[in-house]
Image (tube, rainbow over all chains, first blue to last red; front, top):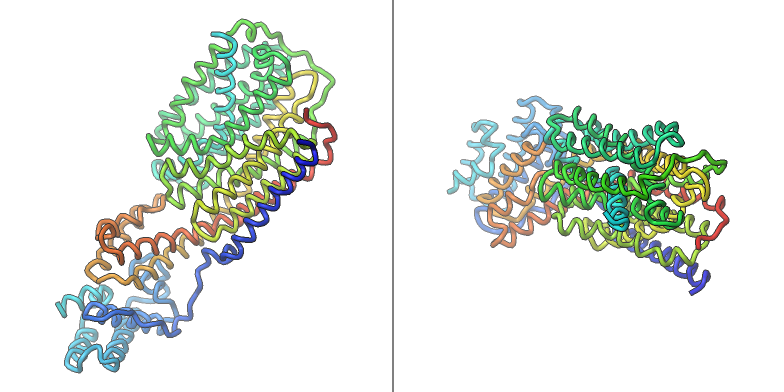
Amino acid sequence: MTGRSGLLALAALGLAAVILIAVELARGGASYGSVATEHPCAQRAAFQGGGLDATVQRIVLDGLDGAACRLGTTREQLVLSFSGTGPTHWSRKTIERAVRAGLLHAVDQAQARGDVGSLTAGLLRQVIERAPLQLLINGGAALGGLFG
Amino acid sequence: MRSGAATLALAAAVAFALADSSIVVLALPELYGDFNTTIQGVSWVVTAYNLAVVVGAIAVLPLAGRVRPAVSALVGLLIFAVASIVCAAAGGLALLIAGRTVQGLGAALLLVSSLPLLVALTGPRPHAISVWVSAGTLGAAAGPAVGGILTQLFSWRAIFAVQAPVAALAVVAARERSAWLVPPAQPGRERPSVAAGVGLALAFAALVGALFLAVLLVVTVWDFGPAKGALVVSALPIAAVASRPLARLLSRPVEIAGGALLLAAGLVALAFLPASSAAYAVPALAISGVGLGLALVPLTAASIAERGDLERSASFSVGARHLGLVIGLVAVAPLLAGSLDRAGDDATTSATRVVLDARIPLQAKIPIALDLYRAFRKAQAGQIPDLAAPFNAHGAGDDPQVRQARDDLLAAVRAPLTRAFRSSFLLSAAFAVLAGLVAPAFRTRIE
């Protein structure tokens, strides 16, 4: 081998590096790890699935979406604020009002979709209007318990 | 001890003294938790050592010409061994940092005085320099992997515990007759190459990316086990060693410039990883490793004057490379800490989204969510919690939906944390490019 072949080998290594970077960028390397901030009131795809469990999850998730929209935040940030790890811009009373309103709207939607009957929807509204906030925060478990 | 074994023992001690710059990097999360400190506080465990080596390498210069190298090496080895034991037994961060500082001073004495000893033990000066440079390059490149394996198999204390016997063995080497009789060096007119020193410092500043950041990313953020983590990271030293035949075909300027550019390209590839996957990290590390092997060896060799006082040359070379590490650490540590803070928030948001949207029944979803919450709370000592455990405890082994939710969550957490390393990798790549700019200053060929 000569100095020329050494230069060729070096150039091949450089080309391999450029190809690797190009492949990475083509496969989303530039945007990998960026967390898109969704508009708080943007319509999300409903939680999929049939049966009681999926219905309960749809109501809870739609309720959280509605509450987050009222507070001008994302559903995730609202949930994190429950645990004290997210933003705490709001008083407990403000959160409580938003969560109750969001869940009530979610029950309306569930009834409109035919997920729950009018009797069940009425019972749920009673619970949402009167139950302690913590019960609503743990809504899935609470609602699951009510149905179960 | 025969001179071959003595050479090996001394080279091992040199490799460890240079590996110590980076060997502790994978133990940082454990140290962070054990000592309940801050990221900046724990980073001093690395910085203090490198700073002490720089200061020590300059401070020992007046000894050259007055003290026999074997005596300096012996004192350095003893200081290094005792400080290693103190570090292994340290009950607090302050004592550990103090131990690391003393260890660095001992390492400086050892590194500076080991070069004339190697000449006495191995024969011709170029061969001794080659042994010294190779031991140093291998030690620096393999340090994080060795430290990571020791930490995960035993504890961070094992990193320091294993160094004392290595130093003790090298003490025997320093007392080898041919080494012991080496007289104090006579000051020569030869001056080390300033361009080589600048290039070496910049290349080592860049190595903070390849050595520290890549290892932290692969083993800590991606949570690879010791075997898989070491396998991925070992692409770097293996490629560095494999690059040597190619180096012999290149002129020194091309070797340095090409190596620096490949190191930079590997770091850019690490900055734009599209997934938390070894499939991308291994080639990026291998490219960095080839660049490291090509650039570091000629820069280190050029930093040592071809004639004259070896101790002064070694002092210059060791001081330059460790100064580069300190510059790299000081530049990168706050950048990474800031990015990780923001990425931690993004990771938490992503994890919450994954759990809320997971297609798993409420009986599994709620206990998993609560367990995850507890895991996050418990892991506030700077460690990434075991996020797979709650899913595994609630049926991930049997239920494909729970398993899918687990995998989605791990990917959602790792992605923003991986991205957080981007700016630090790019800064390291910039150091590498700057290191390559010194290449035109070298005109001679490496034989």
